[in-house]
Image (tube, rainbow, N blue to C red; front, side):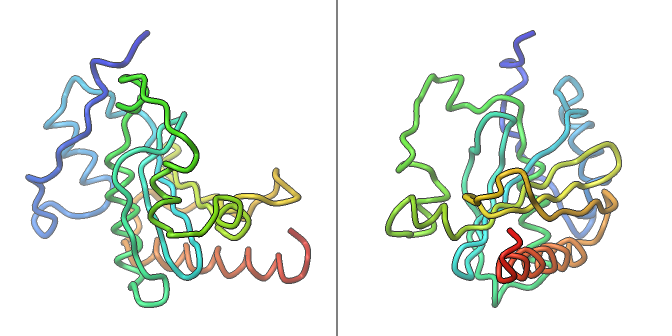
Length: 190
């Protein structure tokens, strides 16, 4: 089945977060009401990269990253800001990237996250960036993180958390996983 008729970016500009809430449960319900015929039951995905104390958060499909990149300073951003950036990108998830539908092929050097990082080379970015994949699985969020390029490609650090945590709790979990992964690399275990 081709899902292209459902593959539009969800416009959430009408949402009043103070009135409607920021948790995924409440925001998913708003989407279901606004887009009753869309694929709202699909699992949502977002990707966060940590590179030289900078955070880059983007939406991802099962095939590729897409959409605008949110940039945050890891040291100065609050846990709530990090969590809200992830929630926002989770809710921009759509099943097929518009780039794929338009048959646009992107060169690795055009990768939006790489460009936003201002890294000198793609090789240097891949060697030093930590990639977090955040996705919904039923009523939980699965967070998996690993270095983009590692000698142990199948190994990662991760956590399951409730689908509805406050943004602060989600941001705190990202910081904790980043610290664990860095410590494992220092110990030459990853």
